[in-house]
Length: 85
Image (cartoon, rainbow, N blue to C red; front, top):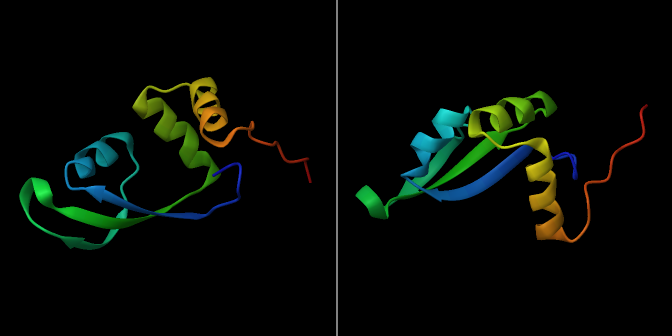
């Protein structure tokens, strides 16, 4: 989110993830679902603010450095820092 100025995220996830999202303080607004039980899939919308990041990292037990490393491995470049306004 820091790398692309996103303010909302849309995702598809299985029902078992709802508990995990609640635990780390990143619960989406569920827009819809299909199926039942372990086969249930959902579509959710997450709002994002810069200060949410620290809370989610802390609750997930992930360091900022680890998160930046995962970004680098996934996208092939580091997060570009913005110049101060």
